[in-house]
Length: 404
Image (tube, rainbow, N blue to C red; front, side, top):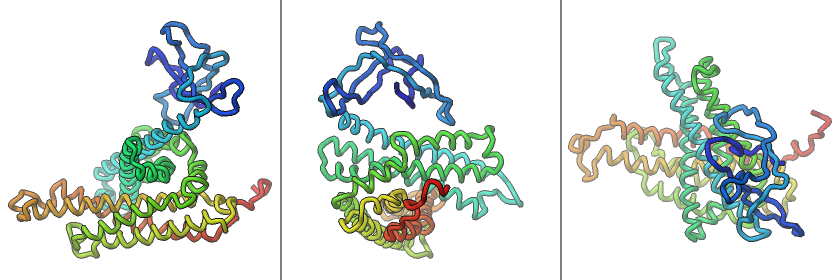
């Protein structure tokens, strides 16, 4: 029997196939099999049967079920005894897709709550003008767009890796768990902010926020739970200095941002240069992450101690990586905003027709402002996470089951 299978039985297609891991007779290793509902002749039904449908919290447009396959026919996929390796290639791509889905739900929540905030009046003003509402909208934008940027970057690395790019393969190797897990957790937080912006209206079915939250909640569970991905990241993926390629890439982009800094373009005018500020903070964050990684993966720290607070390491790693993505976005936005002001030929904005209030200019300013928000409000959380991890705190490990 199999449980928690999505789309296994429905009437939207003539045949449904399943990829399953199982052992060949006489083998102790796992192979990969294709099990169809209808066999190759197109008419004979395979010995698979629906046992029960699961009544889910969300994602109700697609079925999820328990099903049986006693006596069913399966076709070997790939080489015998290498099923897990075959499956992992597909699963890693799916994990990027889960991250993209989480980012999309986060972005939809931002759009719905922003629209509401622009229309809802309270105290003689639209609520979008109130700082606390801006805070919740900014957090959503930071989580959703930062996640989307990371996922698109990862998809590009995935394509490069398939084409034989070894650096892309190494980068993807240390980030896949983060690409899946960080958007799943923090865009869920974003969806709670979206509901809060609407107040009571966000809690009822008249608006889509409660459905977005229900659908989003699955992403921390399927394709590997958040806790398992955290253990995989710290326990295997960053071992042996494998994260060095990522640290080097983030430092390179911080240097590039400083070189591109214009010192007072658009939103940053009258304030310290955002790109220089964030580039400096990114280097500090990368140094912090690298130091924690080295301590936790050294032979001086026991594996059990290191993995006790693996979830905190995931957040430390994820926040640092998302801050890197936001610096990349802000660097591009500042360059494009500079064109809006100066024009491609260094002409004045009046000559090119561009203006600081154009839709494009406002979008670029918003990207730079959100980058500043993430670095000033979210990135500092990595300091507390790093301190906890370096302390090798065992409070959680020492908690006895009977004490709950």
